[in-house]
Image (tube, rainbow, N blue to C red):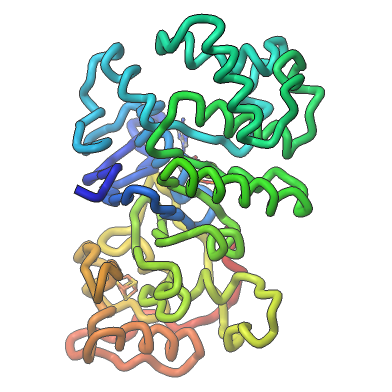
Length: 356
Ligand SMILES: Nc1ncnc2c1ncn2[C@@H]1O[C@H](COP(=O)(O)OP(=O)(O)OP(=O)(O)O)[C@@H](O)[C@H]1O
Ligand code: SF4
Ligand SMILES: [Mg+2]
């Protein structure tokens, strides 16, 4: 078994009043290999954080399974879950919010060790000093309070806390989004060094595609509670198959002009409400190549080639990867070939920049 985390058909619904339900995460399956970074991208509100927290069991799943190293964690009693939690940790976007301002950094780092009955006091203190060194903070940081640190340093504290119990997997939810551009690279490099040194696997949630391109081994694209495409990073950038992925990549700013994609019309319209998602394919209300089947049948993630998975009824038309070319033509404004029994439902009209 190479995977360290296996998520199967995970669902998280929230009650929204009047009997309505927010379909925040709706049947997500993914696996994370040992030492791998799998990034999760998608527009704001598509369910990335809810997925991360539901995997962590910070939200009780509505249904589905989460296995860490082959052990199911969704139905464990509290005490057993606490023990297994060691293997699974989370780093949040706003480290300040997750640090108690009245507690010293040393105490904040020692806390998980106390909760898990790890070592005597002296050993715990030594471990805290070691953690601070690992994340590049001075030893005297232990006696100071969170407000005495900069944003980048606070994120280092958040990372040290996640590392305290020797986890196998760290879920990083927008770990550098709140940081100045100048310190982002330092924190990303720290995460990369720690991954290398400790064989960590990351589920890396980010709306910033340039960061995702930098850190990922594989990338999962999420739309309205579901994964629509998963592929190795190079493969996704070179040959995105899902029309939504193409639109996201087209909308992302690229610094290097030689790598800039052909300017194509961008994604039209707003994301539908997760309390009333469209039938069939959830992307169909914005998809330039939708056909009637898309409203009737949910497209399931299917292996296109070598772990490149896509959920689109048209991705396999006229041979492997042809669907990508089809979406590209449609996004570029050329008419997509109508299929027997179904006309192309929409063509690109008003263009709104994909809001990530
Ligand atoms: N505790 C909650 N109760 C009710 N609805 C929630 C709750 N948490 C999240 N939601 C809803 O679930 C959906 C997914 O939210 P989530 O925060 O997971 O999105 P996200 O992809 O992380 O967005 P962002 O990129 O803005 O962080 C949204 O419609 C959100 O309003
Ligand atoms: S072609 Fe249909 S299934 Fe594919 S993304 Fe568009 S709406 Fe969804
Ligand atoms: Mg979020």
